[in-house]
Length: 287
Image 1 (cartoon, rainbow, N blue to C red):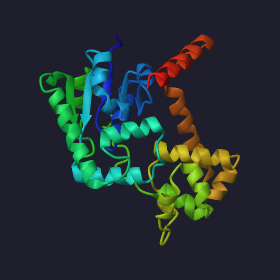
Image 2: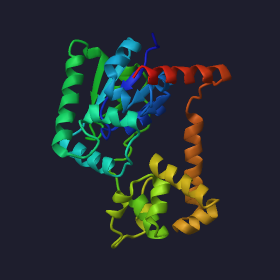
Image 3: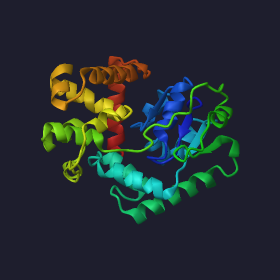
Image 4: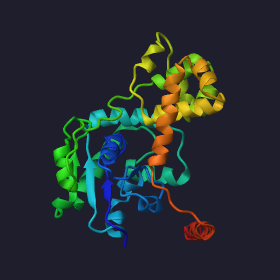
């Protein structure tokens, strides 16, 4: 059996990023969208992806854990999720299967997604109906989340800083900025991993490059800017190509590397690698 964990079991675009940011402020090492149960073992908390899809299994593997269900107004969630899904490349086979199981589709059919949202919420609430002390329901996106409630649930002291609200409203400005400056949809797709059809659906008409510089930085934009710095072989050439101040790119690179440094690392040995490879082969052979 594994150690006690904290799991965020809300669907994507229900405030899971903000929840991870809250964990970080509380000193809890967390991971968003883990690829496997093995990834979950490395962290104190996990959210999104297989966590929402397999929370019953996680409950068995990690007994006495705490579960946080992040909810959201359904219309607001639908708009956010369909926009998010529309700008994502087709997932890998394993992730595609999980997405279809959890959302009923890998696309953006609205009725299917609404039914999936209701089904997941009903599943969560029914599962914990006789264990209310193990489940906390939070509406982060609706502005109805606070430190007092979360910290009482987790047994943590209340921090002084405001409760995080990451990505309150998604904009396309990072994509528009790159399209505006680079004039190369293929290169922008390579740097952002956004599908060509999504990028081609965006309009540059009336776009003001100052819009992007006024936005608060996010993990997504930092990651894209770091890839641009690598592609253009340095801060200065990337800044010139993207019409941004070098200091902005320097800060993005620093934040990106700091996030990576803050993540707990798993010790890896030759024997450990061989064991993991053997396990993967056995898992594939049993399918």
